[in-house]
Length: 82
Image (cartoon, rainbow, N blue to C red; front, side, top):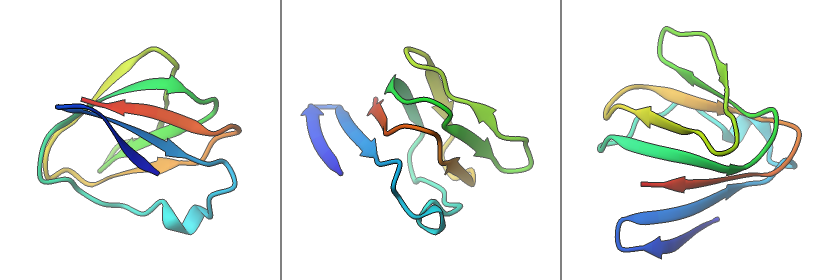
């Protein structure tokens, strides 16, 4: 689910019942900063790197045109995309 948050911000929610196969490697045309609003056990893996745990309240940078993927956690995940 994606819904507008503000002019340059979007809230996105990933449900814990999501099929793992739908969390595919992909790259974005623009760089992204994301803030973890809520979620436990979710990880982010960037191309040629080990996955790392996403922590609530923390901000992460995803460079444009770099392959990355989410790895499903224990709860729903809510992020703010800046």
